[in-house]
Length: 194
Image 1 (spheres, rainbow, N blue to C red):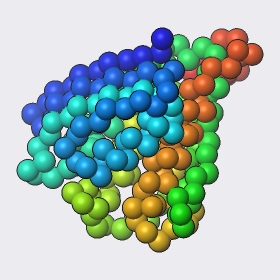
Image 2 (image 1 turned 90 degrees about the horizontal axis):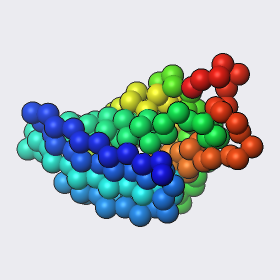
Image 3 (image 1 turned 60 degrees about the vertical axis):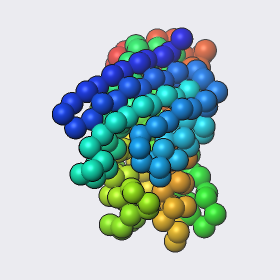
């Protein structure tokens, strides 16, 4: 089983997170940030990853610490669950429509962290969620997972739809990248390591 369970406690947040890369998209998410919970559910459902997260953060300040720390812990859990990465496809990509919005995600589980985020979401809020936190979340995931991640919003007007398309595209691309391919012996790299 490719699973991981991570706990992280700081002066700002307390997070418990579990992932199963070979799941079916079952999720239980409680961060105290309704819109963020909704977005995380798309990663689980469209990534076919079982995902549990319970987060408590200093929401009286704002949602920044909670969102970023959930990203850090998710990235750590993905890295741990992948283990040696033997047999994985390594690459995954998706172009996902959500009504008028269209988002692209491309992932390389290379061990080299990088985020290229090209999405003009503005500086507003959706519910209790600051739109700037979308990029912060994915930066934290990519850094801790050792993931090369490209996210691009190709089209869209409604900000909710735009965010949802990005999270769904990430989930679908992640499903492709972590998938086991029985034809692959060792890791998919001419270097012999990832």
